[in-house]
Length: 351
Ligand code: MRU
Image 1 (tube, rainbow, N blue to C red):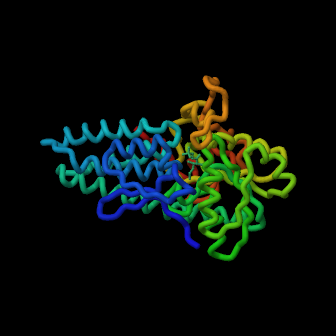
Image 2: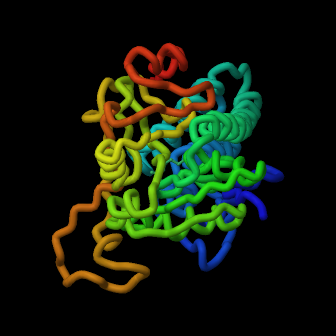
Image 3: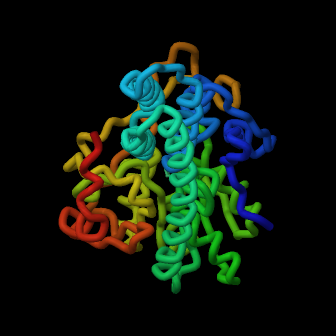
């Protein structure tokens, strides 16, 4: 039994598990060019907010190694252009621009082009390592909340393969499994592209966690029928008032948690907070291609030319969130006051 990892950095090579192919194939891809990285993010070969940020950081740092510029100023111009390019790959997960901004800021400390290149590689590695440590802490805090609860519902994959290791929402299950705490996890399949059935079920099985698959439409019934005691989800962007963008279907679960009066937890590292935005209405919501809905595994399941609406994320208002679990601690309402109290205000400084 082991916790699967999706991003590998060895000898300055970036290798990812192709998440599009899971669980049928565990296929690794080496991302050579910045276009490879862009494509891997857009097509969900790598997905999950922290994993997108880490991959983009390595992608940018690697691309910068090939710049042939005479001045640092020119070097920074190339870096900005490439960061903008990668930053457009997916709009909702703020970890992406957070990582790209962080690399650009660090490069500005360099005295020479060679030093800038080295600083970029070092910083991408730091982002990767920090995320693993953050997720482990999130797991510890989440375990303290879920101490007396064993039946927990989740959606999408906010797991080890969506991060450096452990995951966010799935971190307590991995850690719990190592320590003999038996959770019964219920995973929503997560239409349209099945991150729940393909990825969460696979990942939890790999680490020996008891997991049961349901379709998204079974959530309301299952909470009652199986006695679900808590819901835990990840996040793509959490704004100043606690409003949280996460995989489409998350809002349904938050409303169900309120109706059933069970806790609804969001688990995310501080890199997922965007305090430059006051409320969830301002979060850009990615809309994805219609064939994700009209086709399943390449097979058409709707009439030709069907009109489709395919938002990849929804926004759960902070008022439905019992607590937000971060690597620095657990944040309870009132979020506008308590988020900056725990995280500081520096997260508002994104350029
Ligand atoms: O479209 P995806 O698969 O990238 O969506 C992922 C999610 O919504 C996750 O819950 C979120 O990114 C957190 S991953 C730790």
